[in-house]
Every structure is written in structure tokens, then in C-alpha cells.
Image 1 (tube, chains in turn brown, orange):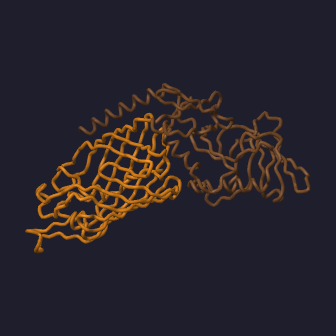
Image 2 (cartoon, chains in turn green, brown; image 1 turned 90 degrees about the vertical axis):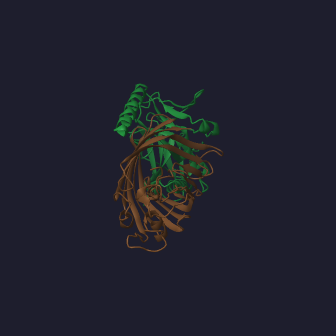
Image 3 (cartoon, helix red, strand yellow; image 1 turned 120 degrees about the vertical axis):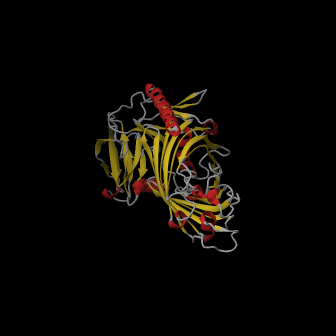
Length: 233
Length: 255
């Protein structure tokens, strides 16, 4: 009986806390938990020069908006804004002080709408010219890293290409394959999410599939893409 | 009964949390949970009633891989490969004397010397872990082994996760006889009422564990654990029943 009544008290308390939480339209994640996920990439010792690591928030399903989305690092005394790019990525600040203070990352959205994840993608080049061989290596680096961290979904899969994402209204969204004889062949543009597996987001996406083109050549972009994803299928 | 017995130590332990690889936190930092848990346990000794107790919750994980958890477990996680954890493990032991209670007459004295061993955990993917541990019982001078699988669902609701575990534990004859054996008289000459089990399966266990983080500091936990004792243990004259069920509910603060 005593056990039950204490259990009841705890349940009541939990209920009260949950209600208090629901009134504030925000979600949070422990900085320590995020740090321990993010540090894997920093410590990774194998080749990763074509890869970059971000902390990403993304919608769990298509119903929801990213308008005005704001991610902050909150301690008792300070609020640090972590700017999100067009696909929801932020540069993660590694800080011993923040870790020791057990601070939290806050998102100005109702709990459960967004996923908080470490996110690795392929680095964009400022000159817009990519060696086809480099993009194959970039995809392989990504696959090797995902295997290293134990992402079960890549089991039995292989690199098939990379995908460039542009804003839906970007009229400069153009990617072409330059063959060894300098002939240029434009790649098809499709509307879709910036990264395969994203539940939401409409971008202009341009997939470069390795099998559809000769091994030697270059990928030439007219403007800088918002993101480059590896296609692992 | 003042002491908790080895059954708790032999039961599948999830002392080592996931993601405890070395170098995953800033040098010199630590992650610490402190709290209390209300626990209701099946009677262990024949004739005892179900017991309710408040037990401390303590879990410390240091940047260098050293961890300490409740009930006297400490270890050192040495792997820096994701999905693999291994290292030395130490368990403190509760003393037990034949004179502690009438049920324990004729049992061997257990001194509270700590046990030392090794643990090895391997991630099978999708938050499913294979866990194992081999311990040298310094008091019984024998070996105990435990193995199991553990699966965590990281988000069953916002900030809530659920872990299911299944496991077994086994020990050799010395450990089993010290833990469950009974000899009549002074223990030197074997008698007709003696119970001297051989080594083998000590228990199979199933557990469910639920966590709810209210905020970055406060965490609510609830759990249930069922241990089915192996025949050699369950047949011991002083053991109340083969199935031991434990419920717990606790609150912890993360420093």
C-alpha cells in the first residue's frame, strides 16, 4: 500500500510537470546528450575531407512548418542563438563549460514535432566544379562513416550517387556533367526533400547517379547548392 | 533482513549505459545522476514477506571511461570503437552470516570482499546490445557469468524512452554452493540434510525500464524485473520461491 501511494504521488507530480511543460511551446534536448553524439565525427580518424558535420533539426512528418524556427543554447545566464540553414542544420558549438553546466538546446516548437540529430553531408565547393571521382570518394567516405557509427540502415547498401538541393524558387539551380571531351550534359531537376528520407521540405533536387555517366568527368554547378546528400541505396 | 543477496548481483545488470565510449565528453567532465528509488521485491528467504525499501540511485560516468553505479558496481570502459564496450568491472558484496536469520542456519558465511571481472558489450544495431560479464567471486573463489540482450526505444513519447532486457546468469559450483548451499552441523562432515548444488544456471531474467526526462536535470524512472531462478538455486531449502519480481520507481537529478 505504501508503495502504491508513493507511486501515485510521483504520477501526480509527473502529470503536473508535463502540463507545465505543454504550456510552453518549446522542445529541448540535453546538450550533454547532443555533445556525445556530435563528438563521434570529430574523433573519427579515417578520411573525411569531403564531409561536414552539423546538428540538425528536421520535421518528423510533412505537417509542420520551419518558418521562424529558432534553436538556442540555454544556460541559466545566457542564450546563444544557433543559426539554422535552409535545411535545418546548425554548427554545433563544442564547449566544456556548456557540458559541465548541463545546459540545454531549445527549439521554439511543440515537443515531438522535430527530430534532433547529428547530421553529416558532403561539402559544397565555392568554385562549383567537382571531379566525378571526388564525389564518388565523398559518397564512400559517408558510407564508411555511417557504418562506423553503427547506422543499421546502411547494411547491404552501396553508394549510387550524390544529390544537390536548391531552394524551390532558385532559377540558377542547374547542374551539368562535363565529359572528358568537354561536352556538357544537364542533369534532371526534380522537386523533393533535400535529403533522402526527409519527411518534409520541397526543394529543387538534382541527382548525379554514378552509373548513368562515364567514370571520368566533372560536375559543374551554376550556383552553390544548399546541401549535397549522399545517395546510399 | 538487512542485506541484499547475490541474486541482485547475478541478475542481469544494465549498469553500463549506452554511449559510454571513452573521449565522448570533454576532458575532466563527468555525467552524474543522484536520486532515490522506491523498490518492492519478492521475498528472498522462505517465510519472509514482500519487502519495500528506499534505495539510493547513483550513476557517475567520467570522461576517461570510469563509471560507478548504484549497488556497488564500478568499472572502466576502455573501448573507443562505437558499438563495442569492454573493460574491468568491480562489484561490492554484502556480507551474509548464518546467524543473520533463522533461514540461513547451515549456510556458508559470505564476507564482503569485492568481486572483480570483465564486461564486454557489443551493439547489434538499432539500439540492440549484446551484454556480457565474467566475474571472479573472490569470496567463494569461483566464477560467475552473465549475458543478455538489451533493446532501447529512444523515443516512445517526447523525452521518454523504454528499455527491454533479457538475460541469464550462471555460476560454477563454488559460487552456487556458497550462495545456495546448506550443511547441517558444523559444515565439516556431510549430513543427510545437506544441500550442495552444482554449478549451472543461476537465473534467467527479464526487465523493463522506462525513463522520462522532464528537463535537463530531472528524470523519472520506473521498472520491473523478473528473475526465474535456475533449479540449483530454486531448490535451495532457504529460497522462498523460484520467481522473484521487483518493481521500482525513482527520481534522479542530473548534475
